[in-house]
Image (cartoon, rainbow, N blue to C red):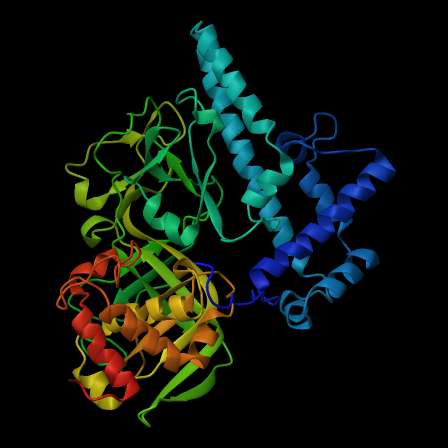
Amino acid sequence: MIAGEVRAPIVPVDNVRIDRRHAHSIALAAFFRTMKEERGRIWRKAGEFFLPDDTTGETAAHIVRDWLTPVPDSVAASIRRVLPASVQDEIDVESGAWVGELDRLLRAAGQILEQDVTAYSERRDQAVAARKYRLADMYEKVIRNLTHRDLLGVLANRNVLPKYGFPVDTVELRIPQDSGTVSGQLELTRDLSAAVHEYAPGAEIVAGGQLWASAGVYRLPDRELVSRHYTVCDTCGRYREATGPVDPTCTACGTPSTSAPRRYVEPVYGFVAARGPQRSVGQTPPRRSWYGDVHMSTDTADVHEGTTVFASGHTTAWSAGARGEMVVVSEGPGGAGYEICDWCGWGRPHARAGSRGTGHPHLLKDIQCTGPMRVVSLAHRYQTDFLQVHLDLLTALSATQETLRSGLYALLEGAATHLEISRDDIDGTVHTGTDGMPSLLLFDTTPGGAGNATRIGEHLAPVVEAAHARVGGCECGPESSCYACLRTFRNERFHELLSRGEAVVLLDALAGRSIG
């Protein structure tokens, strides 16, 4: 653990997703300071900031937008001093266009709080009308908990301000505040790329000594969730998506699809846990499904090419970029998708739907909802750094999915070992190009990228050697795999495909070694 040389930490400073939030922090710090000095106004709690003022009817979010139009010179100068020039150009510091994204995030956070307060206020009033005063008092305490949350903590969790460490695209599994004594103490947030699996309808998670089940996707009344149609070719694996209908014929291999295109939604406002008493944690593990995959949707980066020469003299070509658009897709148990209500967001796995009734419980209210149910997948889109390892023609034509997947995850394990990268910070997939040929796609799981994928390309030869040592030194059978060599929770869908022996075949092909 302490032997050898410790690698110096690497801190990339040109991550647009993170840098934008630093710009927000500079602007809000100046705003809060000015409001205190000039107007004597201080906001410490979420309710004070996001809910309309009793006298003026305006919210602090509206005041922020007005104060930043135009952006004060001191704020613009501070942002230019802190952010890299490339990021300044991308978020358009010069014209002040970055303020629009800050305003959008603040308004969305305010709408979420306002909807929650309204829902619990209605329950409180109903309890009073029914003379259930103890229940009404509990709902009043819930409202107080929601409105008295620390403002800076809420802004960080709503992706307005930077927070300590990664991930940066977070959503919350919202625990109903009337679901027991521990519910008010829980704040469950996840990176959205993991949340589409772990917080999906029907999934379970342990928190506060209890087992919580997700009941659906949180929606705002006047905002539709972003959705797209997508398809994966049954023959070559090429991923395609569009805002409208997708052509069923593959653009890479020309094969007509045998299955209908699917549709996904992005649950950017988070998820809601089921209401009522939760069962205690027992011997049975929480129910969840990691059935899905990661795809590269579009390549919007300036790709630079590279070639690695191995000791054998064999060369392997690769290309790397900074803004590949990745799509994490969760397709539910068995790949059947999820039934999600278009009105309230209540949902369930389609594979366990059973017979359809005339309605379902409303996700936020004590009523039945009759909204239409739509079968969809859940997805998260983000841009990040990527590395595409190109295979020679013979290997590309002869490699099976077992060989490609096994070699891919061996490379990721080798990169984590040799470059001292957390395995959770990198991931990969088998990518089919427009020519129908497969390649190995490695990418950073951090939205905006952290430079890890590019470093893997620059050190591909020792990474391959480390991967070879990883799969060669495991004690499981060569025809199989285990969590000590190739398996992780993220690649659960492909566990039956992964083989140490097939990984060696691909690694030898990359390095130009004869198989023996």
